[in-house]
Image 1: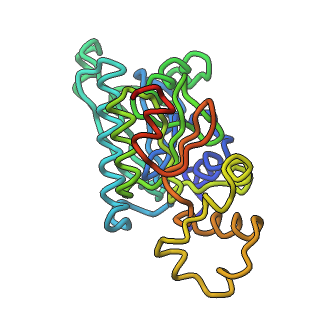
Image 2: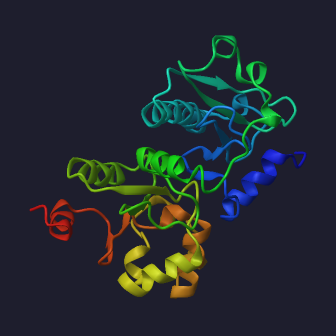
Length: 272
């Protein structure tokens, strides 16, 4: 595919080098638009990069469409907007991205009734500013439970690593939410986990505890990959195949919780 500005920005977001990133969602990157003709104008950049929503299939398509609406819900809560406009064009930059635009009752009538690009001179609007937009970005992160790459916490939230559709991960997330424990969810099937992070976890919990040998992914590995494992080889396998990582992994201020047992979570958070 042609290397468009969308593709370039996805690469920057993956590397934690794009300051407009609000956070990583299941289907891609939520970012702030370059200019803000209305406060809270956001864009969802699909990752993996594809030409259009029709090029996504199965769960990836559902995740993208659901994320678009989740962002709209969050914008209504954070901004107090009257409604949300959703625009997926991908004509000039033919890589999937959706403009998610809060519209306000306070906008002048001659602007409120028209699409953003018709009502406003986008190029001349207020430019994104890291300081001016910081509070809004933090509120969106908190409501959505997301964060940029490399940002370990949002406020006092913890980070739960896992896979969205895993039943055990769902149980852990439900427990945290039921007990009002703030957390950020990192889907390592989509966003991956670095070797450095796995080595840090291994130092705390032991790499043997992190490697899920009972799962389908491990059983399907060639015998040569499964025998004579060392920490270095195990880490390399988990980086290449994130579904090999036991799930979930919860980073707390006191240490690491690998797997989910309600009694261990209760003890860790004093919720017994």
